[in-house]
Length: 169
Image (cartoon, one colour):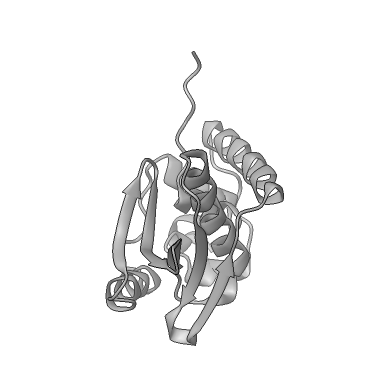
């Protein structure tokens, strides 16, 4: 039997932003833990939506919030901004897909407390196909002997790895 490298929701999130960051994380190269963006994310996750149950770990996923509404299981992912909503959507779809594979039906909510926004997300077969491609590519990136070269994107200025990628500039 061939070993399948675990993929996390965080891997999915960063895959849709920066493949280099996926490689760094998979190789356990830690970002700057005192980075303001990381600290703000931790603060928001700990501060908002206190009524909902907090962090539930299932295998390789960690769900921020979980609740029942009218007999439906709703899982929530808290993000500081909707700027990277595609990444957030795919991460939440990954959680929904993981639960579905375990026989658990759920719906999702993306929560943006600073913007007072909420977006409902539902699993689809199309999402499953996209996720299967993303998981395969994440595993391919992780097996690379060196990280993909850095590419300047709008996220770089807020990235906790920015010094690692751009220290020589």
